[in-house]
Length: 485
Image (cartoon, rainbow, N blue to C red; front, side):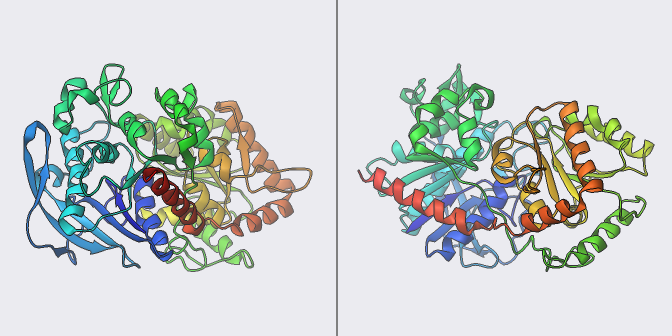
């Protein structure tokens, strides 16, 4: 099977969020199953160009208004694999400080930039003479791909290709002014409620949901949630109409990078069979954070973007009460400036209980996951979530709001049996966060045996990409059968 994987970001070349992690891990897992996967993405300013092969010739990419764009193509491979990655080199579009725009805003020409990526990916396969059976597009930046396959590519060599469109985060849909449709090169006949028009605007993701052979998202619960008004962001009716074509496949994690027995960022290795090293990691983390080194106190961690999606605004209203409990708390994240100011003020006021780091550091993220006893994720919504999976692998018990992938991966503690792998709550409120953290603290001090059993149970779970890759392979086969009638 040949699969073209089109993405706007991919680890280790460019990253702003979980899409990059998926793009860097899933193709490797698919290749291990014998699938020939090739990735197409932009060549951003931050990409390491060393070691990339410059292919001969110039790629001609059709654009809107009957125009054309020209670009070079460089080729590399995903580390640890033979998966080819093709980079579209167009400096006017991609040689910029940010992938999508400065924090809180997008570049004014993003529609043209990602029209170029979508048309360019399809033009490249034809130039290479490599015809995929499935084209896998991801999020709004590549939402035009399945639309082009059904329209401008109809009757050409790519017409037989099935398309899968994966929604990683429905909150970002690629919405532009309706008058900008000609930028995409599509005719006005496609600007209608059944395709690209949505409340008087151009909505790329809506168009992909109408045209893709099949749809997927990154957890079973999120697949159900986005068909409701609460989580659907205006597309719930469209997605509910395609409910039989929409599947939730839980993301995996890179178990080689996130391995407590071989993690180079940690003070000591550890495993479910021998947790001695975790205590060493905790002490080292407390010292790094400037907190008193107290083995007996429960240490809470939070790593993530400081945005309303992550529920940090609600956490802020509970934080002072939480810090009155006998616990320590480390926060690592960047995002909203008001949030950074608030948490920085609390850290200055209560340095014995709370530490806040606002410059992201991958090694430090690993150390927070390994050294913490509990990991807090009070998300408003969470399509899949990766940090709770890292936490489970490191024996750090997640405390999560039961939404999206968090509900699919964390089993709440059962006091009667001692079962579970963490602590869950439903209501996103300061009281719910406080009560659930208090429940975890009480369990820590009063039922340490249950804590140890939950740790070992959490670490025994398999969140590798192997299972997810098998589900994607089955979905590709289903898409091919659907496309070919």
